[in-house]
Image 1 (tube, rainbow, N blue to C red):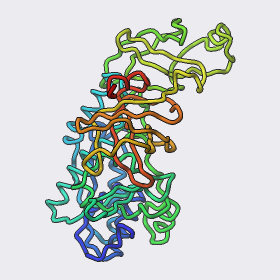
Image 2: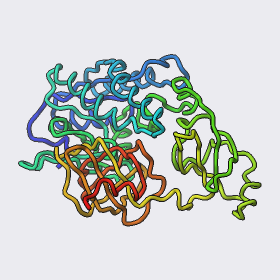
Image 3: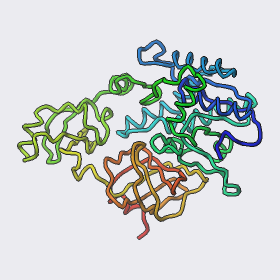
Image 4: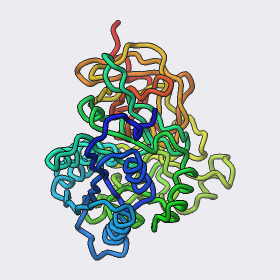
Length: 385
């Protein structure tokens, strides 16, 4: 059953972002007979007049949608909450040499906490967003988070930290639809943003150059770049500005010369494989398939489970990044302390500390944890003898 087709009629507050997904979400709920109110969330205000900031236009688009649908819309500023709960953690992770995923934290702390609290104060019984995911009431088993039916747009990965109380009040009406169908509906009913391009990138950074943005908040400590033989082949601008698996923007000169010296192809590109914080060294390797870019296991911490408790050990599917197919794995340990350890059936590429390892059982998203390390040797300290 679609989230929007419930028998009871509710007062539902919809997060209107200015995009087509949330617009169609609001329309579906109104068609189902619910009392719908729109909320536009402003989560970032440092660059209000910046060329990369689209919040003003996004609000105008959201207001235009509300006008066409005949619903109220309120502009709410959550910038202070965002800076405290999301952005501060984002910077802490980068300073520690990890690569965080702020969209995961934004969903847990802002869109389904600060926004939900505000909606409840407005008398809402439910909230709804334009995410491609589904919620299923499993009765005594509580609420389950399911993948969106459009596998190319499924966003359950970003929602894996939601808890039972949040899911109980949440609807994802377009989770049952393909993106092409959402676009078709928007055009058919004459929504002004029917052809608006999907937003990309981290919410508060937008389309701006990422390194330029980080440079405002993180100190630069240049250091050597080494290859897998320990030879210095360049200089990095600061470890915080690189992520594992990165290919572009490393800035290594003389690639052909170094490749020839090691007998590699002249065209083998360099990839970031390790960040040695103790020595302030960036380690790069030639070629996408280098062994140092593959991991057969990982450990993670700060776990969050949809059911409120960790799943049992055994076979599961895992994603270690959003744009990734399911990887078969064996969950070796997941306990109340928030620690998780798992081993992959097939070594995975560029498993990155700071990103989320999210577990699935078929269409069900079970939850996940923040990756700490991606080597098989780290498991020894976690597993029983």
